[in-house]
Length: 477
Image (cartoon, rainbow, N blue to C red):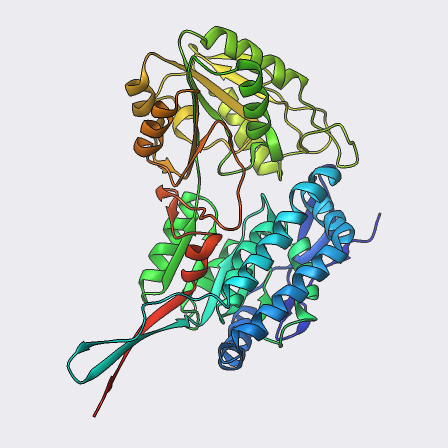
């Protein structure tokens, strides 16, 4: 038996086991075997982390934006320097391909931290002025306080960055909980951040849903931020309402990919297949719900099925794979369940099965023939499964695209500029891509509407979400 590695919480500048000694096993999804243990934190651990964050807040709040910028820039440099180590830990934790994780996750993470380092020094507000005779008014923008943050398992280290970077840049302190299935890279990030931040500014508490619930319900945080399922978001919003905490929610997605008859089919198929299967489709913005004009439906579907069949999944060290396993046994069951419940009128064009007997690998899958009200159209699959529907005209495409509870991301594929502009105006999603799908940049906001949540990640808007505004008025007499 291989000895399991021991992960620990990071509280007030120290690595600690859970106060009551409880742990949970961390499983490598490539093998399905445990390789580490992590704390299963309880109330005492949450209390300690919140106390540390609260004690550190006044000092961090009062640092200059320049000092916060310098700290974040040092953190970005350290992540860049230790990229190979971080990727190795993330790959073991998630099964992600080493090469793609190195090129597709580390550079954006570093860039995002550097963006928020700059944002710390670029707070915008109205100029002071006299809006009442004899009085001058001004607006102060301030950090909100302690932030309780819960990150997901699909992009553990990148989502940790999306959480802590804007919060810390704005002068807040953080208690962050990674997913119970993927804590390893967040614990490593804590080590890196701890070398560049005062103790208590950044804290990591490992644990399960109950741990996250304790964090959100705790009296100390002024804000709760979660990236996760709609169910989890609703629970967080309900819990936070009890004492009127601010809430920042990035939840599920069901991105429509609307393909019109004038597209370059081979190019569109290639790009959509990558955007649908990347990270095993475990992405809230994944291109998993394709709507194709009826005149090219058959040709497009056949080409997409071939692209899927040519897509490779496998172990992290295989340079030819696009994606690795699903994250955990529960997610494998979830994805398999959608396929097992397919209605008779649906057709599996390719895939639709587990790959191998070890780990949680699932074949790239394309399903056609589904109706708008079918489960696979309405619910988030979060796996390497792309559905294809046929539409007759622009109006029907819009009705079907908008006809889900989610509203995070979407894309339109056409050479007709006017049509693209009409669609981008009427698509009810927080992001609309035109002739591409899935690229993100630090300068632009990411966040949805409806059951995809509210609040923005990235951009100046995401930074402002971690601030509050105060009116200050002074007499001129």
